[in-house]
Image (tube, rainbow, N blue to C red; front, side, top):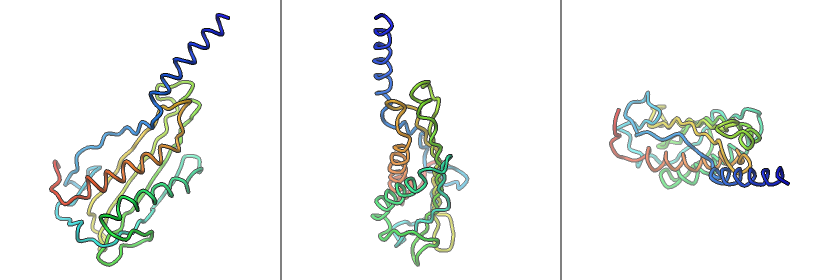
Length: 191
């Protein structure tokens, strides 16, 4: 009986701690947009995004640590990018090169699904899932207009969380950030 009661208390504590991490952590803290192309978040100070009509999504690479879920990850990013970029560029399609008067967004995504069991049983960052996202926006001549290179992580969640949620949460979060913060016609802060 004592063992059963102790197990029950342990289960309650684990549930409460797990409930605090139900949402993907998506920790990576965005820094300010820079006018230095060597920084992770860059906007060309002379770029006028309002003049660009049409955007091509060019998926340079989409990989996962176990080669599972590649189509799921790409689909999440295609849908989210089309949603967030259509208001800025009009037509958004997939391809290799920028349309006349438009831009091309080179996209690279790398996902490590981590270990759900380690996240659930060990906790404290064990089994962490991660996603690396690289966006390079170029005009039709190939000049870099803006970029966003970020890494996000998920280490919690109820019963270890579902790392596939990380792909959806990260795509929505960073696509929105790229569209609404990086691709604005304003002077970048910092260098």
